Image (tube, rainbow, N blue to C red):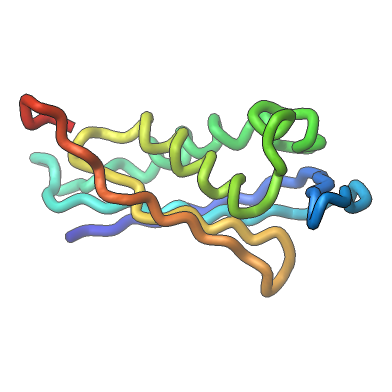
Length: 131
């Protein structure tokens, strides 16, 4: 098993709902750590090009940069918690990866010492054996 990790930071505000009460709008410098894995390498000896991972993650994060997450898709409908931000990033990145590469985890840190990690379940096979 091979694992690759890339990290990015973006600044954004949010106001989550806790126990039915919305907290005041406030900002964070969000840190994102994406870990992907592959069981094999391509003919060039790569699990995945780091530049491809970085570019994909930058594209996923671009709408959040300097934004109010509460007004940004999909968090205009979802509570913009660190947990749900991590899940959203993982789901978006999974669609951008080569078939032999999968998202192992996404960790989102919204404040020093406060992070959430999303770990996707295993990929499901279709009837014809592809994923």
